[in-house]
Image (cartoon, rainbow, N blue to C red; front, side, top):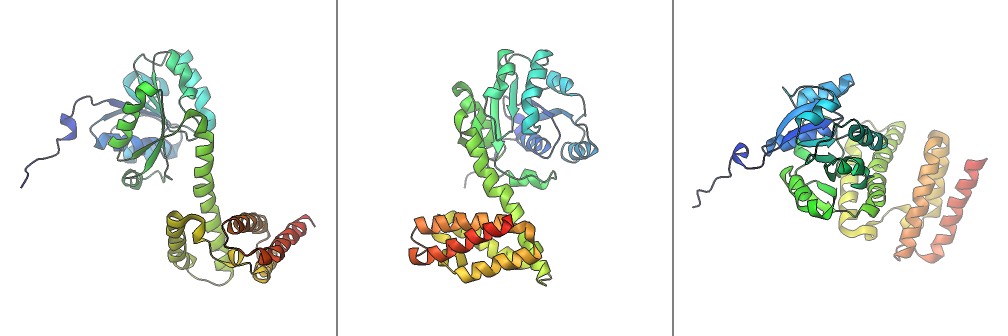
Length: 306
């Protein structure tokens, strides 16, 4: 039997000091994950009370300092701020001389690739875009969820191996995304994940209105099976009244939503039309049934305008 043991992380070479600029939900979790791989978080910046609590929970004993101090202390800096704030932050850090030559500068924005870090690149930094395709809670459970999580990776070609190595150290799976494809990549994730939360929340509200005491318990197995089927089979997993062409049922749905949840009508109609288009294209919805169904959906849209 083999007696090989995994080396202790602290004994591995090339361990880096790590800083976090922006202690939102993402940054402290990534830094904590890098710490498990043997790197050394040394500084974190955060302004709000919630940010300070997250930093204390996930990075205990790591000092809370200004962004400029984070840059001065760390060899690897995680820029984990909202997308719209990122370009201004990078420009400001470069203009004030906070960026040091040879410093690894990592942002976690899904929207941007490595070019948003060009001001820091000109100052000698090594730019990496590592976006975890995961939703974060701001709690220690996020570190566990990174195991097997895909990361959208974009960097200069000469830094590709370094970027992918950092992702693997965090337990993630690197997926190379071209610079030009970053906005589409991010839109796809937002469509699937962010809109899913809205759909599930609306569904639970409607079930409560219908008298269901535990909508989460009712939806859990159904949505879990639907997600699994969709990931396995794509459009072939479509079921329900739209895919079957049950125009009368869909009309009844629209009427009930108008009465009990008018704010959900537009979303229902938009998703129903998209579902009908995909079901038609994949031969699931019979053309002879599609006409009545699409008529119901068109009338539903006209009802919104009244």
